[in-house]
Every structure is written in C-alpha cells, then in structure tokens.
Length: 285
Image 1 (cartoon, rainbow, N blue to C red):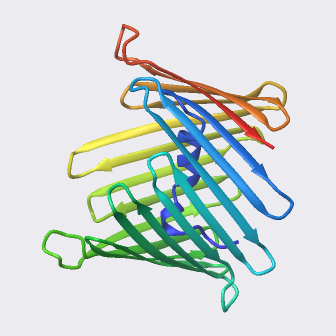
Image 2 (cartoon, rainbow, N blue to C red):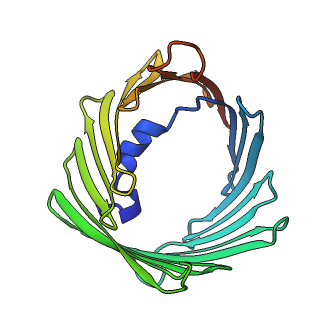
C-alpha cells in the first residue's frame, strides 16, 4: 500500500478529533446515488449563534471504465466549482485533476491543476494554483521503507506583496504499523505538528494531536477517543489544553438515517455562556 500524500499525513488523527462534532450548528446532510453512477450530496447548516444559513449541492458522476470523475458544486453564495479527475492516466498510478471556481457576485475566478503519482513506496504530488494575485505551486514527495516514511513539501508562492517567488519547505517523518500511526511535521521552521493514532481494539481508537506555532508562541494539545458500540451507536470524546471538552454521539436510527448530537463544554467558565450544542441528521438513500 502506498503512503499518503504530504497534506494527508495527519488525516487519521485529525478525523478522529474533528469529524462528528457539529456543536454550534444544526446540520442536515442528504446523499443519493443512481445505478448510472450519478451521486448527489446536499448540505444545509444553520449557525446557532449568528442564525446564518449555509448550503451546497454537489453532483458527482463517475465513469469507472475510463477512470474519469466529474464534480460540480453549487453553494448558496453563488459559488460554482467544477472538477475533473482522471485516474491512472497514461501510466498506472498517475492521477490528474482540473478545477475551476467562479463567484459571479464578486467576479472572482480561480483555477488549479493537480497531479499525483503513487507506487508501493512513494507518493508524489505537484499542484499549480492560479488566481488574480498570481500563481502558487506545491511540490511534495513521501518515501516509505518498511514501517517508516518521510518526505518534504516545497511551496513556491508568487502571491507575496513583492511578487517574488518565496520558497517554503515543510518536512515530515513518521512511523506506521497495523494499529499505530505516528507523524511529525515541521512547516517553514515555524509550525510544528505531531499526531499519534492508536487502534486499541476493534471498536476503540485513541488519538493525540499537538500543534505549536513559533510565531505566536502558542501550543495546543488535543486528546480524542472513539468507541463504536454495535447496538448503541458511536461515542466520541475529546479534550484539549484550552480546557475545552467535546462530546459526540452518533446513532443509526434506521438504515441510511443517522442522528448526530454533540456538545462543547468550556471548563474555565462557571456559567452556561460559551457552551455549545449541535445536532445533525444524515440521510443516505
């Protein structure tokens, strides 16, 4: 199995700690798919504090025989995004993606071309972004040897005030076995992130995510756990060094219908001000 790309190195721990926590929001998610390969995804959220509504509609069509995937995304703010993904293009393991984004209300236009190449022990990417301020290029590669892996990402940004390409180097090293994943990354010598994810048993998973910024001299450590009970649903809890506790409960009401309840508690506050509640309903037809 090939290693993950550079930007996804902390994904396992990040998903454990962030996914399923909808506190502060009321969310409705609807999924549907046809036998012809057309997928429909719709999200609607309401912020409990600001009462602002946000929604989007995504249409996804896959042509598996040709390795093609078309994605169109519309938001309530009139943002239109179109994507084309090509897998195993020219050679096996090579993927290409083309994306355009347009916001008619403010005449904002962006485009990007992304490529990736995967083998058993490598995963390299090259992403080029275009907008009205200039171009941005991201190059990365991850190499794996046994249970160890490491890599580097280089960013060339032309959108700086002086319009000069300024290189930014990010480094990563990690270790992965069947049940344990440890990752350390250093971004531009100023941002450090470390994650540990351990699968303790079939139904129990534990993770730690550590962030440190040299610029702001701020650090944050978050612990998270997930327990999957076959009959009672999924329980999640997390706690960070800022004295915040998050709790999430996910229950399959019936086949294709899932209810998610979550809350965030501010332990440094004695009153109810600052605590957040959230609810979500996912429907998959």
